[in-house]
Length: 407
Image 1 (cartoon, rainbow, N blue to C red):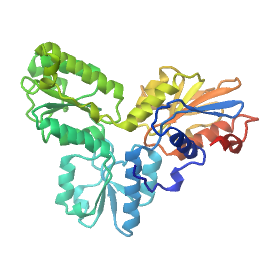
Image 2 (cartoon, rainbow, N blue to C red; image 1 turned 90 degrees about the vertical axis):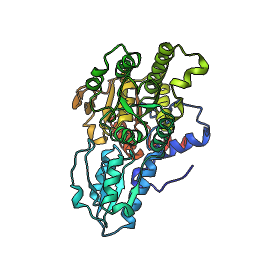
Image 3 (cartoon, rainbow, N blue to C red; image 1 turned 30 degrees about the horizontal axis):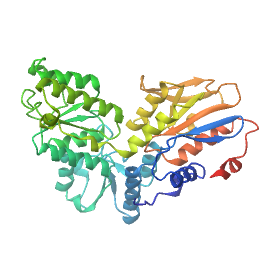
Image 4 (spheres, one colour; image 1 turned 180 degrees about the vertical axis):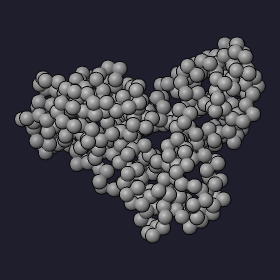
């Protein structure tokens, strides 16, 4: 696999060697058991897979290359390159300006961008409409495209099945940059509708079977369907693709559900299924799958709490939090700065969509067992900072150098 030039300040003297040790000893990625770091009064269980994925490393490599290769030029990012505040903050400090925010709201008018400016396309990709605007401005010659190859794989698969007269069902968060980009590319080739979750998939199924009046579709899926969508005609042949950072089990569950709806509604024999439902199983992102599978394996062990690091607007990180909080007290933090002291931690509540402070999050016992993981856009250095900060609260802990000898 291709290697990338990642700035050293994103790497870690603790986390990076552990990941490399596990990779060398498990090249086929069959061992999802966590890594145990035993410091005596505190133990850390670290997920087998987490942190920068191929697509994120590719994006960071290209973005910093754009800065290095274009001194004196204005450099713009269409929106956040990845959903990590440390990475985006560092790019801004190096002079990079954001054209839009994560919801697509314009921060810098297109007219302010010239043909000589550098434009970086984020890892989520971008819409066909934005690509056209960049081209019209004459800045196409100076584009650095960091779109994740696995996002492009989804676009290509959607195009392939669209050409075979399937309607595309995109499982994703309607306002997420990647889903907006995938929707935009998909609708170029086929009627397209976005479903956010199983509940919306079940509503869509009622339009497949005709049990819900077609006219109501446009309200139920407002702003989530392509122009000219006809629920009576366009739901007779469908295929499901996804926002790559969604829970793989959720996407597969939605796909299986809709496939079974088609089988029942049209009384399909096994050899007839693909007449109505396209096989798109190969569009699930390997990194998202690995991180989620590693989290499931992590949660088979015992712990007192889980700390998940990552950007609060990171979809893949949020799904890891959802998995962890089903079993253990879980604290979702952006960085080490959120660990205020031994008694207080500031963390993000996914349900209230706001930060809150929890007291006495570390139990008074010995040893305390803490699970650690992070999202695909979170640097190893952030996880190291969190581990070191938590470790400092435990008197008599073994030195890091001693524990790291095994790696």
